[in-house]
Amino acid sequence: MKAGIVGIGRYLPEKILTNADLEKMVDTSDEWIRTRTGIEERRIAGDDIDTSDMGYEAAKKAIEDAGISPEDIDLILVATVTPDQPFPSVACMLQERLGAKKAAAMDVSAACAGFMYGIVTGKQFIESGVYKHVLVVGVEKLSKVTNWEDRNTAVLFGDGAGAVILGQVSENRGILSFELGADGTGAKHLYQDEYIIMNGREVFKFAVRQMGESCINVLEKAGLTKEDVDFLIPHQANIRIMEASRQRLELPVEKMSKTVHKYGNTSAASIPISIVEELEAGKIKDDDLIVMVGFGGGLTWGAIAIRWGK
Ligand SMILES: CC(C)(COP(=O)(O)OP(=O)(O)OC[C@H]1O[C@@H](n2cnc3c(N)ncnc32)[C@H](O)[C@@H]1OP(=O)(O)O)[C@@H](O)C(=O)NCCC(=O)NCCS
Image 1 (cartoon, rainbow, N blue to C red):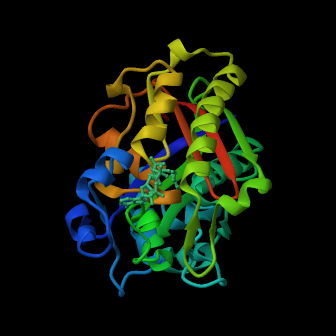
Image 2: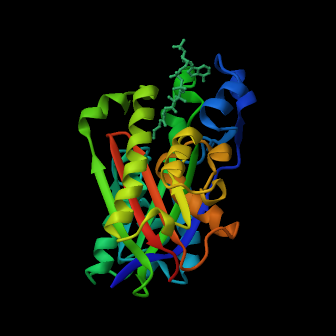
């Protein structure tokens, strides 16, 4: 039995915060932000929109896209480090709001790699035959843990949500291989005290090395090579980090997802948001081999190789 993605959805708050807006808030410039990160603007959720609200909107669309009813969902996994409150989990809040009465529910905490952790966890339940449909949501309201006076971090992050339904797909499609990893010795480089604290240079070095390695590892595990890859969806943290993974796979520019310029780093939401955007743009087709790869605080990382389609 093969698990794959059978429904998708995303939600982005309407309010746009541009680099020009940030120039008025901290000592920075549009030019610095663009050249160092590739970010031009990001979305910010207002006081009336919390993490669960964004997750709910994305999840509703994914359920509709999959053509199932909320009661068909067996498990809800929400990847987030910015839950509405420590408990109950965002997953339980969604379970109630969606009316997913049958579903077990929990949050997954693996920072920007959280969506990869969620997908790989959900896959196990589908492929063991225990569950038929797993809702995996990646959602963050990073604006509430961003120090708007710290130029090192304030320019990087944004809010948003993406969701997928995992279900059984045909034998030659679905998730072919995965890699998950963690290195707790690097926890000091990226963490939340009251706000996000980051050693940008250390995170940058780790990300460039690990993203490339994980891409190669999932291909090897699936018995495939770089030449087989049709499209790359990296975590949208920084265009220079993303470019390093693209070059490692020797892919042309048009075969890598890029949404970081519009949304900044939305942590666990960045990969599912990008999936939706690339599908809408017609860049992902049935039977394409897609590599998705994420990294984040923890430190954590995760990648999958997936043959697209139901
Ligand atoms: C943060 C990051 C963009 C900085 O880019 P960089 O090329 O490494 O820049 P440096 O660290 O060399 O810093 C250069 C200078 O710019 C300054 N600077 C930092 N933020 C700035 C900003 N928003 N505007 C202007 N200058 C800024 C720094 O203070 C530093 O000044 P100094 O040399 O006088 O100390 C980069 O390190 C990065 O992307 N790291 C990974 C971050 C990440 O992805 N985090 C999330 C993981 S999920």
